[in-house]
Length: 92
Image 1: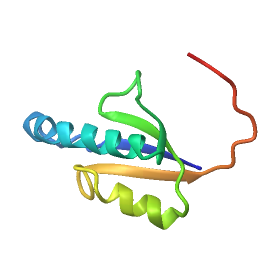
Image 2: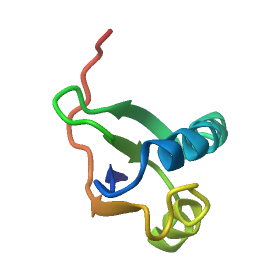
Image 3: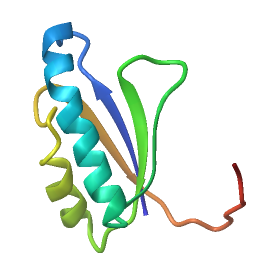
Image 4: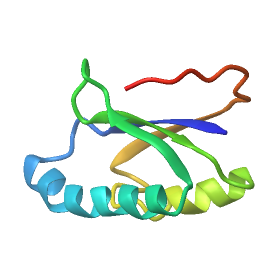
């Protein structure tokens, strides 16, 4: 599994962000529905930043998916960390 921190660049204009955000959300939904993104959400303590927990066969597959995001490659930073879940609780 992968943890992806996405941070939209601070120099993006409000107009750029507004124009791209709808496509960004559609991208999230597409890969959530496909089972590739298992958890998605914005940070509550930071604007224009969020986290994705993803499950793909390979890192290359994940990187190909990230390249489809409306903010890729120059309007956001994508930090990818691979991890192995050892304990999973229930929440909600």
